Structure formats: structure tokens, C-alpha cells
Image (tube, rainbow, N blue to C red):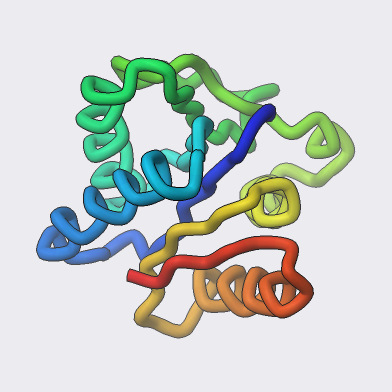
Length: 147
């Protein structure tokens, strides 16, 4: 990943009512923070909403790069969404057991992104990732936007 990267993580049951706020936040990341690379997963409603918002943003900002995080790339082929530049598979996942791949992929992205946009209103894995990112934010290693 090159340039200023933004990753997304959120509850799979995120309400569609946050879509407008999400679009505004993405626009701000592009125009004010200089983010040029966005990576999103492909599980659940939040990720689907993000993919739609990113495709819309790319119509206004053709130079941004969009990637689908592919934690199971070695065993499962995923179709690249329209408007996306490709998929991203962290190489360090090659030695991670299959059932931990998504957890490690998310941690990798949090460690290697300048920005995180998140929707987290429940206890669970998303909350754990946000807390991990917040510890990194206190050290100045990432900037988090909570929706």
C-alpha cells in the first residue's frame, strides 16, 4: 500500500442511516487529509455500504485507489467490485491458520494505515479492533473517525 491509506471496520449490521455521514467523512479524508488509498473488507452490511460510497467517491476523484481486503486469497477467489483497483492480501497471512486470517488481516491494516473509519456500537470483534486502534492513536500512529 502506498500513499495515505484509510481502512474501514464496522459492525456487519450497521444501519443505512449512517450512509450520508460516511460519504461526508470519506470526502473529508480525500480533500482535507490527502488520503489516496482506501481498503475495505467484504463481509456484512457496513463493508457493502462502504464499497458503494467509495465507488461514488471515485467518480469525483478518479485518482483514488480502492482495494478489497482479501484475507483468504490463497483459498478463496473474490470478485473485485466494479470501480476497485484490485484486492490486497497481506503476505504475512501465509503462515496464519485459516480461522485467524480475518483477525490478522484487520490488525495488519490497522497497523499499516494512517486513518481508520469505523462504526462500532456493539461488543465484539469490531470493538476489540477499535480499542486496539485507539491505543495506536494515543501514540500518534493512526487517526480514527468514529461514525
